[in-house]
Image (tube, rainbow, N blue to C red; front, top):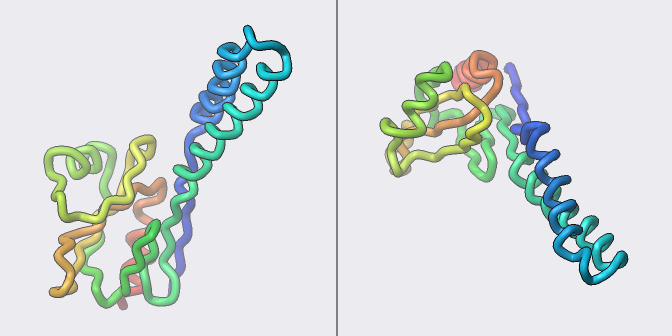
Length: 147
């Protein structure tokens, strides 16, 4: 069986913004002295980095006959057709075509995605939308898991 694993990391520019957040915190505390300024620099940058790292820690995996996307674990028996979405299709499915009941592991900085139908009659979720940098590989891994 083909397995798949991807971590949806935040872009490098977000790490620069985290560092600049630390600089902004340092500048706000500069009138209070050098020690508070250093505390603001370290504390502000650290908090912003934790936020970026947490948001960028989402994983998509296909292992053991299941799709694990973020906090969701969906058995392959509950999965229907998987479609790779190019940038334009992905934009449509995360905006005007989106269903409020869908499971969405969405990262706006990743332009391509995969849309996987959920076929479990007990589950009201119609599909899962998964942002991914490798949509064709994910579709192939899902097909192998379902077979």
